[in-house]
Structure formats: structure tokens, C-alpha cells
Length: 235
Image (cartoon, rainbow, N blue to C red; front, side, top):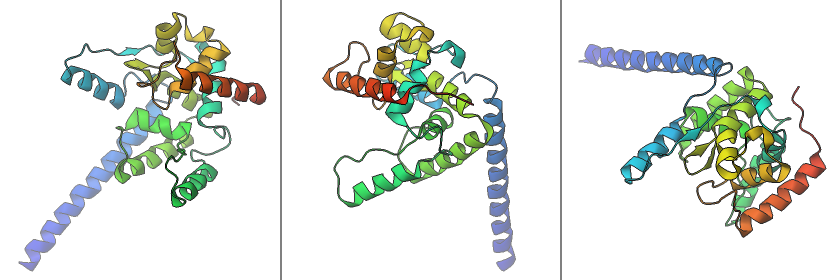
């Protein structure tokens, strides 16, 4: 019986080991591949399509990948000012922002500002599913480290701007620009870029055009931050 128990333990260990090796290999391969190849679809896009189908709605998925050179320089600046002002300096995680969130939570603040960086949001959108479990958060940390190591900041921004949800069934800068203003992403004005950035925390609740009172106030704040920032340069 003891020998049988040891044999079972070894088999379980081999399965876990092989699964881990395959997962690491496939994840590294995927990150390297998407360093050069456009991301065709994300888990969130498929989940949203499934939700639409389940609710009996028409499936809507607007997603047109374009090079970062075909996106107005106003948009990267707007999302940095709105979402992650330390994007160019951190290595995937904004430690100071995390510490502020922890302290706010300890004080019992009802609304705690998130500390998720653009790198983390990119990792989550491209490789994972939405959710707040510790398991998913652990995978998010893993993929964030990988993309920060393999991709440049410019590539992270390019993937982010092409893949993030920007409205109901709308993903990426090009689809958002055409949906809201019937223009290309390259022609987004400063105010239009700020409007897109303003809705990113909840793109299915808020509209970039026409903007409601909350989005309008956010647009004004983001445009002000953009004016103070100046230009965003990728090395």
C-alpha cells in the first residue's frame, strides 16, 4: 500500500510538472509571437460575444488593428495621463500607487483608486479573463513581467490601444474613432483622445460621444494634464 501511495504521488507530481512546463513554454511563445504579430482576438472579446449571444442580442465586435504610427499621438498621451502617469518609468508595477491604495483601504475608504498600470491592463486583456480572484491576479503579475521583459514600452502601448475595450463591442483606437466620430484613429484630436481615455474605466457604461457630465468633467481634467505633460516620447 505504501508503494502504491508513493507511485500515485509521483504520477501527480509528473502531471503537475508537465503542465507547468507546457504553460511556461506556451506563454513565453505567445508573448514573443505578439511582440511582432498583431493580436487578432482577446479572451474578453470572445466572452463579450458569448454574453451577447446568451442575451439574445446581435453579436457586435468591431476591431481593426492599426500600427501605432497610424494612431494620433494624442491618444497614447491621453491614456498615460488618465490611467498611468508613471508608465514610462516603471517596470510594470507602480509601487507607490499600490502603497497608496493599500493605505486607503486600511483607512476604510469607500472608493479606492486602482493601481493597475497600462502594462498590467495589457497583460490582462491579451492573455487572461476578467475577474478579481487571487489566481487571476497571480497570472496577471506573471504576464506583466513577461511583456515588460520581451516588449518595448512602445509595443505595450500599441497592443493596449489596439485591444482594450472602448465601448459596447468596440475594441481598439481605430474602431473607437470610426464609431464615435467617423474618422480614423490617426485624426483623433486632443479632446477626442481625452474622451476615449475618460471612458476606459467603464466603457460599457460611459460614452465618449456624446459625453455625459462625468465624462465631460474627466475630459477637461485629462486635457489639462496633457497640456502640462507636453509630449510622450518612446525611445
